[in-house]
Image: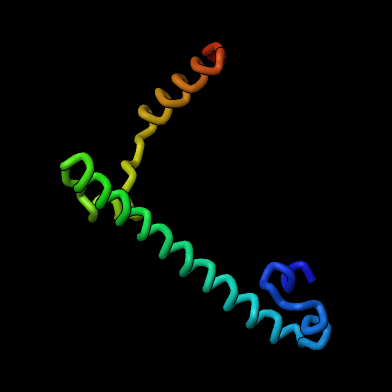
Length: 98
């Protein structure tokens, strides 16, 4: 019933549905939410571009802003150890050798 409420299905319609129909409605609801979220993201990027261009007179690389699949550099073992030691020191921990 929580799934139906989240998808906006009235309670009377929920009790008359089969589980298969409920899943179809829920999938359509979540696809619609994803599309709306994607649209809001692109609208925000467009607005940021326009504001920066006309107000501050500077150009923004839109392709870089829209690139959501940025590649992260893989860390080797030594870099990972150094990162852990730095985080440990930030939180007040001590380095001890076992």
